Image: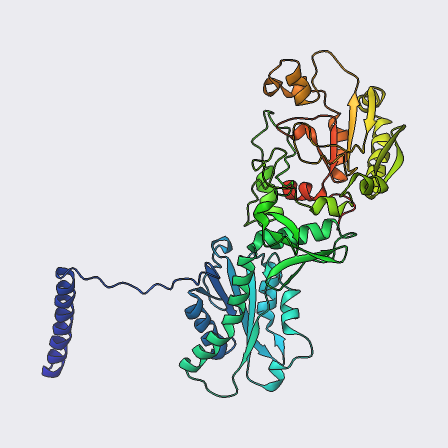
Length: 469
C-alpha cells in the first residue's frame, strides 16, 4: 500500500468517525431526523397519483400533483405492485400523449382496474400541438374507460420547451384547484351519498324523473318540470331545500332478503350490497315507519312522484285490474310489474302444490286505501296505490300483522318465523324480482303486505328489479 492510498483510507475513516459522532450528538441532544410526510388535501382525502410516463414531463407533473394534494405516487412503468385501492378516496390518473392518443399501457391498466367508487380525475401531458388537440374529447375518452369510479373532469399540460420544476408546480397548482373546488362543492352537497341517491332514483323512476345532474353546487333532477334537490336524506323542491330539518326523512333503509328474527339474521346481504351498489359508502337507516320527530312534516317527494297529494288526486291515478282472479284497485304506474308477478306466480303454481294451496287460501286482496299508517300521522303507501295486501284465511296459532298480534295480548316480538302466516318463499321472490318489498321482513312484521319500492331492493341487495334501468 503506497502512501497516497494510506492517506485516502485514513480520510474515509475520519469521515465515518465524524458522521458517527454527529449522529451521537443529535441523539444525545434529544433530536431526531424524520422523513417529511405529505398531508392529503381534505377535499381529496387519501389520494393516489397513477401515471405512465413516456417522458419526464408526465413524471414531473405527477410529482407536482402529489406535492400539491399530499398524495402517493404509483408509476405504471415501475416494478412495485399496485397498492390497495380501498385505501384511497381520490385517484389522479394520467400519462403522456402522442398525437392526441392515450398511451396503450394506460388504456390496458384502465381496462383491468376497478376504482371501487373512488373519484377519478384524469390528467395528460404533451409536447406537440397535435398532442393537445385530439380529434375527440380526452375527458370523454378517459370517462368511457373508467370502471367503478366516479369521474370528474380533468385536464392537460403542454410542454413545448424545457420547464423548470418551480414553473410546473405553479401550473399544477392553478390546474388542480378546479377539481378540488368541484370536490368541495360535491361534499357540501352531500358527497357520494347525494350522488348515489339522485342517480338511483332518477334511474328507477325514469318515466317520472329527469336525469340526475350536478349543477349550481347541488344534485338535482326534474319532476313535473320542477327541480328537486337532495338535502340531508330528503328530496325536496327548490323552495324547501334550504330547510330540510323541517321535513321527515324519506322512507329509506337497507332491505334484507332474510326475514327479521330468523336464525339467518346475520347474513352476507349487507356485504353484497356494499360490494355491488356502493362499496365505499355504507348506507345507514334514513328512516323508518315510526319517526322520532313529531314536529316535522312529511317529505312531499313520494306524494308528488305518485301524484297523490290529496285523496282526489290519488284516486284519479288508480285503476282496477284482475290479480289472481280478484279485482284490486292500484296505481296505474305499477300495473306492469303486478301483471308480470301474476304471470310468474300462475306459471309456478302449475307445478308447485304449495303455491296452489296459497292461492286457494287467499281471503282477500286489497290495494288503494286512503289512510295513514296505523298509529301514525304518516301516510300509508296504500294511499298512493302502490301497496297490496294478500290476506290469507285465518289459521289458529298463526300470526299475520304485529298490531293484530299485540291486540290479542301476545308479545308480538316473541312470535317465531314459523308461526307467522307467510306466503310461499317462491311468491315472495317473484314480488321482489318485480320491485316489491315484503312486510314480513320488517321487525314489525306485516306478512300480507307488498309495497312497490325498487329503490329499496337496490339499496339492500344490489339487484336491479325487472323493468328498471
